Length: 495
Image (tube, rainbow, N blue to C red; front, side, top):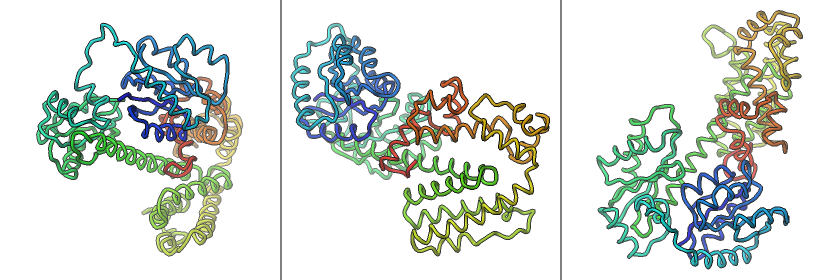
């Protein structure tokens, strides 16, 4: 059985190759990578036998990745793919020993023919000389457990690893940092009750719990261990497969991976939802009404796409209450201002999307009107002038002194106005404005990350990347990939 890594930044290509690979005898999927750096990491960690490598991928291009690894893994077979036939690329590929060159879209016939040829080449590979024997447990978790085994193969591995049972469950852990250290501690805690072995693959913990085990009992034990062992702020995702016999443990692996990805996707949705609410609350009364109205319309569209109608309505109730409170102070102890409308009662009674759209437009219009009144009454003229200047010039090297000059006040006075009325510093306000616009450019334009950095006032793309990740929780590259995935309708709401 030969392992295959698929590298491409287009999700439909990844899915198509994976689908065809499942019906190819003698091959198993080692993983999928969407960028040059991710491909490098997966090649070093999984050491696949065969790699389908797109040339035009983010970061290092496909040929640069091959150039980096082909001497270390001389027996690895690489198949290039690209959307265009280009002699210059083929010429660069020759000295790297690239096995085949495919032009996308790749037909089933071409894909399977390439696999047949690759199978022959792999079978004829000379055994590597002087290579240290791989640790059996590492080999088991890297390749064996993720493919169907014969009874004889399973019995051999069961004996080699001293597993006490013919049955087991696989679970996966993805942690924000110090993966190996934390997984070791978690395995130790799980081992107090179960027979547990683990290894680290692709910066993810893969665990085999051997025995005739109840899945729900194991999940409860695992959740308790995670709660007690890990620091609260540490990001964590877990997936638990179904109990299986040894030869079919790959099914437990597949189930664990599906659950982990579903949990991560659900967390992503909640994260993006929270960011949108924060943006709305900061912009209302400060940004132009049409801009805020558009942001709100996109937001509720995302909510109603991500959740069923009843749950989406329920999620919008606190949003309207937050916004009303921001604009009128109606839910604070120190005011007697009544709410503009009864959000819970009115939203709950809405029967369909057409009625929701009409109601939401009218209700949000009332909030916008109150926000405009509050702004005209509470924002001093100098601050309003400074905000107008900032929104027009944020892409340049804007300083507090520049905005103060535009508002005809001193920098110290303007800084105080920001603290009192915007509940934010001048620097934080400009940074958040830049990142909001950077998000929009990454979603809606064809600019690369460096161009987006320059267009939003950052001369150092690396610094831009750090600030972007600090505010959004994602790197610019990961954000772009996630936006493409959502636009493609693959889970979540449109970004």
